[in-house]
Amino acid sequence: MNTDHKSTILRFAIIFLIMVCGFLAVLVKIILVQTKESDHWRLAEEVQETHVVSVPPTRGNIYDCNGQLMASSIPRFRLHMDPMAGGLVNKQDTIKKGKKQGTIIPADTAFWNNIDTLSASLSRVLGDKTKQEYRAMIVDAKQKRKHYLLLTQDTISFLQYTRLMDVPFIARGRENSNRNGLIWDTIKVRTRPFGNLASRTVGTTGSTRGHGLTGLECQYDSLLVGQPGVGVVRRVAGRDKTIIQQEPVNGVDIVTTIDANIQDLVEKELRGPVETYGAKWGCCVLMDVHTGEIKAVANLSRDKNGTYRETEDRAFMRAEPGSTFKTVAMLAALDDKKITLNTPVEVTAAPWKYKGVLEHVDAHKMNATLTMLQVLAVSSNIGMAKIIPAAYDGSATKFIDKLDRMGVIDTLPYDIPRAQRALIRRPNKGDYVTISKMVYGYSVELTPVQIAMIYSAIANGGRLIHPSLVRELQQDGEVIYRAPQQVIREQFCSPEAIADIRKALHAVVWDNEHGTAALSNGWQQAQSELVHIAGKTGTAQMIIGGLHNRDHHRISFVGYFPEEDPQYTCICVIEDAQRREDQNPPTINAGRGCGAIVRRIAEKVMAYTGCYVEHDGQLKLQQRIQ
Image: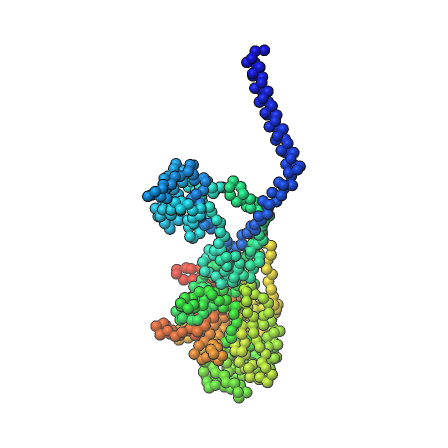
């Protein structure tokens, strides 16, 4: 065996021996890790997994009755950058000393190769700075060796995010921000696609934790918010990565009874007169008489700058209703057969005192003998104060007990936080005169929604249905709860009494001699050639300084339509409308103001729902599709 052959065998033996030793070393290490060192590594893993975080769920959506989004949580993004990220540097930049100390001498790096592309892309997509401004800002941060630079003060929309991701340099950091230094923070923002439409009813959320503050957002916050998941933060490839261990449960979606299209037209019809006459506030509610579903609710209040916004739930706040309550008082007496529509009563132009103590005055001053139907049509306080208290032997207790049996003192909760309920106080012992004010809407307090509920029951034949704003709840597109119809009374008074009171409400709008919402000095008020409306006007003096003030009024009109086949009830209330000499008319009363608003809403709602269509510039009656 020659020397070369021996040398070759020796070299192979050495290599083989090294490989065997290496294999044995690995084997020994594996055994040690699995036995003696297992506790150490298990503890290290546990320590690494102790950084547990909450994974937020997506807040549920709010829809109108047609499935249109009224509130939703959408992702927006905040972009910041680490100019010193390792992926931006291929070799170390050098920094001059001496006179030009701190100046960077560019090396052949990814940063300098892509700074112009990045700056141009940010300027083009975001549009808040020029390319030069973005470049100067990023270079300055790199010179100062900053590891955090906020590139956008405002959040970026998803569309802007996708447009930026079309840039190859930006897209390469999608999975690992260290590759280009760009870091995206995802933020869920609550948005309303219809803007401020029904904003008070839909509600608002807080800017930090995102919990509901007002409206349905607040009332159903616990369902909308969902349940957070659980994640563990680990360091992967030089960055923190959240590993989901338990998926979050997204919030429940709410389908409301609101129709966004009807809501829009209701708000527009209310806003015009409220702004024109500088009212303190105005509200309007449209309700389905057969289901109790609220199809629209508008609340406009004047702020300190004179702008009208939805800042208060006026439709759910109680106040003295004035003459719209006369209908309720007369209906009670008709149901008890204590009066008829033909019961006569003497009214006077001069004030009249009940029991010689409490003075009552009619706005429509006349000396005449009226039937009770005409009393309601002309809205006579004196006529009501003479007849209805006497029908109940002057006892407020008997009268209030009757209202309670009818169910009009509604005690069911509402879908709006802090919504108020009817307040009808029993007079103190020895008070024998307050009942004479109660029968025409003073010393009683109801919300506009409650008044609409009562008139809806009159319109549908007697079924008193609690108003609702929520139709159903959905989870991942599946219905998990459908709100039942809450019937307060199947028949809250006799059909005969309802038929009588509907005749009187017809006279309010269509009796041109007595009706307070009929034709008046050429004013159309609540009369429409397109849709027949029946209803009642109301005027109440506002309480200022603890006393009723004759110079400040709350006016209203509530009516149902079409009168022949009622589908909707609409109530409009305006507080403290001001006199305007530059307007025609200079003042608005309940008929010219609120009655006219309800008339215009009725015409447009009927056109929208298919009962009327436009032909030759006019709305023509069509057969309703049931």
